[in-house]
Image 1 (spheres, rainbow, N blue to C red):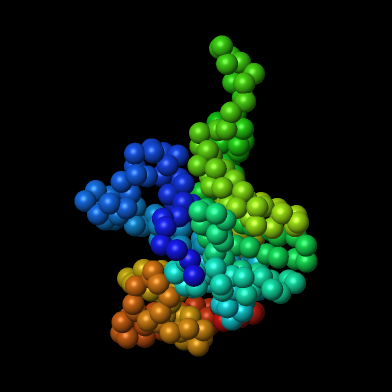
Image 2 (cartoon, one colour):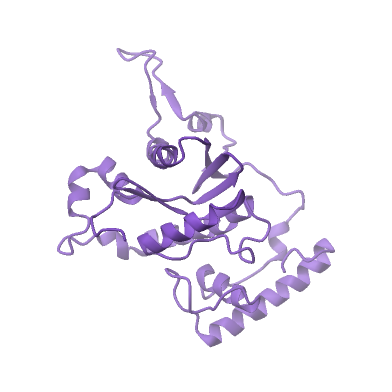
Length: 266
């Protein structure tokens, strides 16, 4: 049985890096974070969820059918579920939970292959720029070219929190599995990647009035993967919305067969 002490999670670790005082007050209900109700930030978060769902296909051809995700938000239950899956010699897991001392993490994606563990931190941040002026953003380590700090190498501020996030996870995993090889990966959207099909986006004209969270849940139920009323933190899908979204996806499925001669949308 896990005790009720407050663990240092990834999000709290990041808060502490930004401002130690912010970390102290983060769980005090008297000091509400107004950003939680910001519609713009909510839309950014939704984009992040979409990237996270797509990234699951990096470690599994059928992540929902294979049930790779640890759904529970409870500390003890999520850790137990993770440990159960890790009993397999080869396994892919989404959102596995780990506790080392008072450090608690949920890894975005993890693959165990015999005596090797690959962890993947998924971000919606883009990687790959076409402009020459943007080349510097491809480098994690920045070196001062002039001034009193010339030659000094520091973590680029643009990547600092991403790298600290990955390092925090790696620290926990390495201490829990000291006899295994740990590989750490940062997964980013490749902005410079181009499709081989001209005007591909024009084949999928969808006015999504319900939002992609509801859309994804509705379609997963239509494939009997799980119930549309489950899987927090996504909100419930009403019956009418479910029927409308299913209709759109059936049309997309038909179009995908016509265009690609294959069921890209199953």
